[in-house]
Image (cartoon, rainbow, N blue to C red):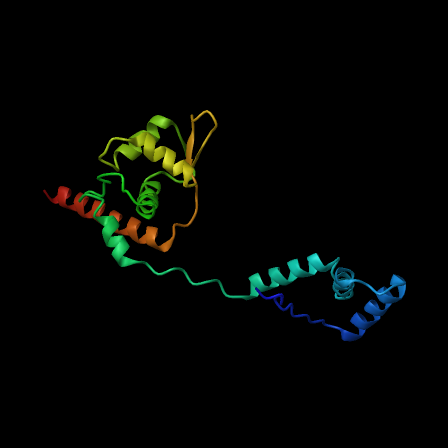
Length: 191
């Protein structure tokens, strides 16, 4: 493993003011500063409280100026495999064996819960029972809470969906399942 650290680019808006401030720091020091002490002097000369503050400022600047990372592409093979776990009405047939399948299916169940509204356990059970066929709403409630898609009060009396943007794969699944439900409703309306 190399001892070379990541380079830390440094720039200043006013080199003259930087040099004066650094010279003042070095004069008051009275000894040859160590590595960390010199880094702190450089950071203060650049207008920061210390080196850690300078690094935090650099990280914040980078986060604000760099474009966001592109979203992951939808894996259509996994999406097709997950869709097979749901029946024609969009109900989950059985609890999937793989973790990635479970999490994706839980996003579909999350979408069936009302946003920004507390529900009692019976209401959550009713909503989950309408979306699965294997009769284990307690398992689904626990998993929703365990992976952070829902929260509950310590006594378990109130559940609430956690509002966050589903990942691309989950958004695709939710959209496909919504299409199944609307196609079924249209067929029933026409019959």
